[in-house]
Image (cartoon, rainbow, N blue to C red):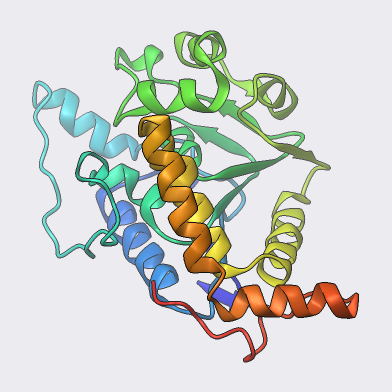
Amino acid sequence: MAIDAGVAVLTLNRPDIRNAWAGRTALEYRWALHHCHVDPAVRVVVLTGERDFCVGADHNALDDIGDSNGSYQVERAPLPDFPDDTPADMRRNHAYPLAVSVPIIAAIAGGCAGAGFLVASYADIRFADDDARIASSFASLGLPAEYGLGWLLPRIVGTANAAQLLYSPAPISARRAAELGWVQRVCASGTAVTEAVDYARALAAGSAAGSLHMMKRQIHFDSMLPFGDAYHRSVADMNTALKSPEFKEGVRALREKRRPKFLSPMAIEEPR
């Protein structure tokens, strides 16, 4: 993990197996996100992979599961707690990226399939090289949409587009994934990571950390509440924000006709 200008870049680094996902990978990813959540130097996360993003689960693990008639061992290891404001129903391992206070941008190059498609779907935003190849892959293995993806994906792209992404295991281009609403920006080949980092740096510098934290919670969690409850909570959030140093800096920058300096010491961190 590298941190600079408020942006943490997390890189999956098993290029010899195209960053195939395994239990250890999931454990390390969750701990890395926890550190980003509690480190005030981190405002935005960019998740990428060396050469490929992630082509799915480690085939050795899949072979073992097939040979064991579907049984598998869950790796037992200490995990970081969920943030205190995480709803009980969302305290699920794969939903951890939704709960952390910082936005996550997936920067996709090469192959993104199966478990990689799942992990990228739990990011907030997705950038992709125009020659990236994207596939859900589950149907070709006789599997359902795994780990809540059948609930999450329609919220991202709508029901019919989710069906297109899930029913067919055939790889699609980044441009087609963008047409379906899954990819938010298609980049020239080899530039998705750079563009994602530049975008993340702009967010880190120009968007208050407290605002990003509250907006992320509003998008992923409060949107499941009845409208009245979500509205009431947004007013409470606003009243809290009006007392924050970040609001004062934003107003001061507006008055002085300059960009706010949210990464400077004058913007004191609100507790996470």
